[in-house]
Amino acid sequence: MWKILAMIAAVLLGGAAWFSFQNKTTIETKVAELGQEKETLKAREESLEKTNADIDMVNQQIMSLKDETEKLQVQKSDLDNQLLQAESDRDELIAQRESAAEQLEKDREVIKEFPDIESLRRQMADKRVAIEESEIELSKAEGQKAAEEVAIEQLSSVAAEYQALRTDQEAGIIRGEFQSSIAKAYNKWGFVVVNSGNDQGVVDTAQLDVYRRGQFICKLLVTKVEANQAVADIIPGSLQPGQSVLAGDTVVKAIKSQTQAVAPVIDGAGAGGGAAAPSAPAGGGDAGMGDGGGDPFGGGGGDDPFGGGGGGGMSDDPFGGGGGDDPFGGGGGGGMSDDPFGGGGGEPDPFQ
Image (tube, rainbow, N blue to C red; front, side, top):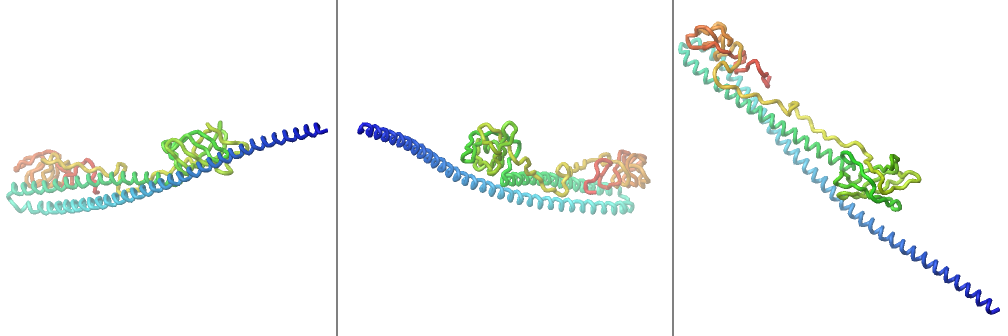
């Protein structure tokens, strides 16, 4: 009988030892899993700290962009002031030209009362030189205005591009084409690692879509961006039933549009950044001043009291312009048009 009891006790002791061994193995497994979870939690906390640091850096970049935009606005304001000054100078030159034209008309009336035509001709030549110098100054002012308008347009375009880039960064929008893949997937922890980063255009808080062979899997929210990879959380509720994210899944951006850079319209600027500056008037004789009538400097036909003939020049020229027997040597070359300042039949006056 005692042998039977001994065998039963041995069996019970063996069973207890086996259960004790199984419980020990289970406990060790749980302890290992708990340790792994602690390490993962610690890694997530470190990742969160780095993400916060990255957010601070992005905020600093945004502030830097704001400062740069303000500087560009100040430069634009300075150029606007310079443009206004150039326009004022142009208006002053136009007024001088009109005043000189009025004086020339008066001189034409006075010419008939003086017998010394050669002296009057020299005086008129001096006045013509003065008018041509005014035209040159006006041409320079127009060129300066055109250059300033181009500079203003360029600064406006740069400021608009900065503004669009800042807007997209704040909204988490990836600019340009983008496609990548999943490097690692941690479905249990609800995040993944993407095979693209800053160098590929990924920005913080960007939303991504995950596909596998054309089938939608889930949506992602970027929480950390490095040079060539990014960490993104799986957006709760977006994971399709029965699916999980796998390494190699295709990743594309969820928001397709991006902010367009729109530069402000600059008043008075043409399609080429401003009106082209008129060419400087050519110095020299009457032949370079254009055809037409009414030029006090030596044009052609008409009733010339000093013998000017009927060539291709101006009418009513007291200085011998045009063909015919001119006792003062006026030739019959091509004269000026009705503009007393040399405007021919070519380009229109940019101030009309």
